[in-house]
Image (cartoon, rainbow, N blue to C red; front, top):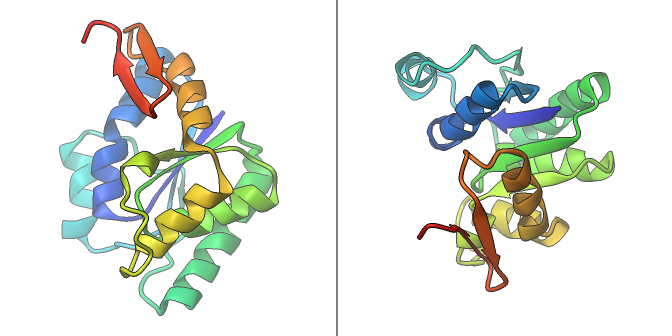
Length: 171
């Protein structure tokens, strides 16, 4: 079973194709929404417009300083992981949600698929950039991306180029 952890508008939008692929392929998954973004215009409207299922878990962490927000997310996702026992956790981007979800996964020895992990500049100086750099150091994103592509291939054969780029074979 896959746990898809998201909490911000970009994460909802960018994880939508993965959620749909899981639904179409009959792959078991749950959505954990941290509530890092929580207003209608930054959250629920995207679930409605993208016709996504309501998250099974909503942590409602809201606003706070980085440490407080990250700590609440980490404690919340850890409780869900212990109950659900996912095979893999998927996160996207470089937010407090990503950092907390990946760290909780790491502590419980649950593999993490970090969508867009290879597209980062590795500049940890930005507000959220340090989360992406830290998560990238915890996990090998290519290894888990390959696992995910093997599981959810979107009906297309793919070729792994060891330069870190995943491309459909027909390109």
